[in-house]
Image (tube, rainbow, N blue to C red):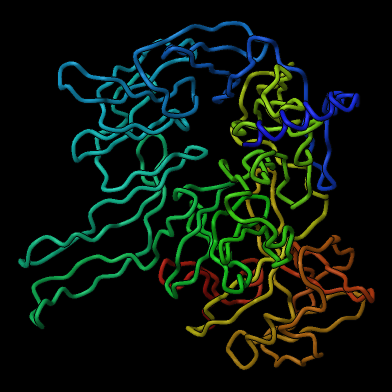
Length: 538
């Protein structure tokens, strides 16, 4: 219908003697207000009607034969007798092929030339990540390496894709007794050798059907959310904690609280302190401080989050045309970037093919390559994928809001902490000194805080409040400074690492590492699967 209307408009234009609008080529690059850049270049003629299928491989299908190209339009190879079922990762892509031995279809893998390198022998097969792929044979699923060999012997109930060398798996929970085998699952994080990196915290419960105890079984106190294919993103995995609250957990079991979602559901942790959420079929992006970065403007069908902003951008559509939007909610490439309309294929590894529609509504041979500035496979790029796609440079000396609940002598206390990130994005949390002093006042670890040009801490004395306790006159991420003033404990200089956050009125607030304070002031700071972070004063 669209093409018919466009053709009718063209006939009318010619009949009236009007000029046919000229095609307007897209810009050579677009940069959003959020700092993300997408480059555009005309595609080689060979890539017309192709799609980018990952790792710089472009694929075109014709008469049941696939042709594979590089970004320059050079032919890598051809293949037939199978259906391409996924993208290239680690030089492999899953395919489905007919197995004459069973008269059924099976899954295998091809390389970038289209040659079958792992024969079609599996009932199902995922893409590779970190040199490992999940396959299924019968009722068993396990990991294989890029040669098609089983990566490790252990079998799992559930397997999830690797991310940066870590994967989530479940195994049968332990059971003792004579009442039959329990079918509970126990979660773990493993590395690419199959070694256990972290066991989900668990407790033992009585198994007592009909009121008769027949044994005890292991039950995890945290659970997977079914979000983002249960994969870590920039080191964090969404889970449900002991209170059924969704939090982020890293490979050591450390956790980060999420902001209030106000009735929305978490779709994915996008990394870089951003969350993709959904409410009433509309999607939005919020920061870890709760700030709304992209309001609920687009339904999930329009915000095409195929890779959940892996390279900081994703497609946006109005139903016919496509644009590109960044993870801060700012438009990079406008929808309808062509003279009439412009479509963009799926963004894979930060790159896609785009087509410009002509005035009649037919696809022209105006084909372009769109790629992000950090895409390793774009024209002229290295062709080597980094372990983790680079993120926009974070502002220097920025502390990130990180509210956490700490068990203090068995009592939950919520602290408004701030975190600093290292080069790998790992968090180190800092807590306001006066918040700790107020919380521990009246316990055996109480201490007084005064200021005389230095921060003075005196242990054993009751704390004198100044009204700033357990509240912060600012919210969200905040610039910090390193204090010039000394910290003294009982009159002696103390080597305590600290940061200072300043409110809009210029008043400073000193934050310390909680574990450092415990060591210096005589209380215990620890972590357990049952309690999370805890403080013991007795």
